[in-house]
Amino acid sequence: MLKWILLTVAVGAEVFATLCLKYSDGFTKPWPVIGLGAGFLTALYLESVVIRMGLPVAITYAIWAGAGIALVALTSRVLFADPLNLAMLAGMALIAAGVCVVSVASHAQAATV
Image 1: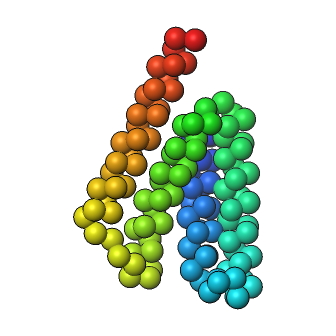
Image 2 (image 1 turned 180 degrees about the horizontal axis):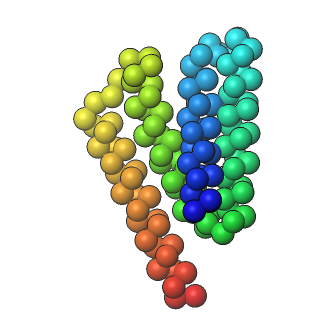
Image 3 (image 1 turned 120 degrees about the horizontal axis):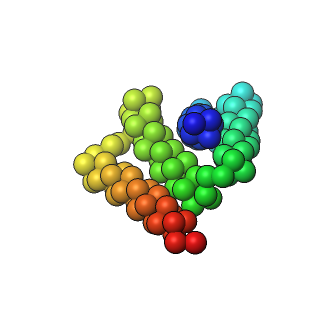
């Protein structure tokens, strides 16, 4: 259970860091740049802890990246009025489906080894 909590926090840190990119105004504002660095370092550290706890790298990364993409797209729509249309939502659904396929395939491979 702890690894899933840590992975969720890692996703949140990655989303925070990615949103700081917008606020940094091309790395010209120091506080958002500091937030960006802290967010990505936290995200990567927690992702490494989750992998060390036994969650396969493919699963960890697929969830981290897929959830990050979806949450950044939704959050940037709210915060910055970035575009979010049906095609983009369909793409995010395909990413979620891909994460599920990777997860199922990883569990099937582990069962045969």
